[in-house]
Length: 278
Ligand SMILES: Nc1nc(=O)c2c([nH]1)NC[C@@H]1CN(c3ccc(C(=O)N[C@@H](CCC(=O)O)C(=O)O)cc3)CN21
Ligand SMILES: CC(C)C(=O)C(=O)O
Ligand SMILES: [Mg+2]
Image (tube, rainbow, N blue to C red; front, side, top):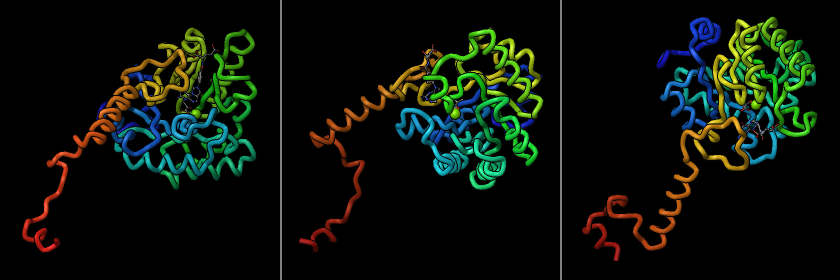
């Protein structure tokens, strides 16, 4: 699987072959290039960029222009990974016409391989219309952050019988509509496993346990570069935030006491030319 192009058909194939799908977010060229070179299957240009890159308190202020800008940058860094553009709040809520226009921009302008949108039953007509236009769609249910004002915060979903049943129904509806995969965010592990078993398309979990068919995390979370909050589901694979601060402290110190730059960091001029300048 490594160093080979991951495509829309690789999703279903991965589930059949029991290959766990690795997905991470990226929002810029250099990071996307590193993740692609490391061999990640798929890169999600998440609307979480509003919080991680732009400093908003939630994802609601993120615009189509923000998303297209960052998706273009990511695409330039990617050779093999499957790039998913996350449709922002209000880009697929007004009409099918606007939804299609916006989904089309991710593919045509930004070069994304697929789009993701939040919700099940409520957006199923939009999902079907996008797929009819030959654009692969990834579903996303459970904690759908664009519904933060309805949920009253970023909270685990699917704990009650009613809620859990709704999630199962939404997952089946999305599969029937033809999505290539479904992100399950912040749902109890046993429910996520049950949903994964009911579907023939893969589930990609974030805070949904290891019964899913793949996993996704926000890259700054898993590298230890984001400290506004750390959800329970995050594992820190590195502490780059600490490393960055330490490096910057060293730089400041060396600048202040003129230890940096050294001769090897500078360019020379001949004494002959220099002599004529005095
Ligand atoms: N940096 C970052 N990482 C993310 O995973 C992420 C974003 N940003 N922005 C968009 C959404 C928001 N997400 C969040 C944000 C907070 C929690 C959180 O605080 N969860 C609580 C659980 C609360 C409960 O028990 O109901 C936790 O302790 O994990 C979870 C997901 C996931 N997404
Ligand atoms: C957390 C993932 C699934 C997401 O939607 C995002 O990064 O925006
Ligand atoms: Mg998102």
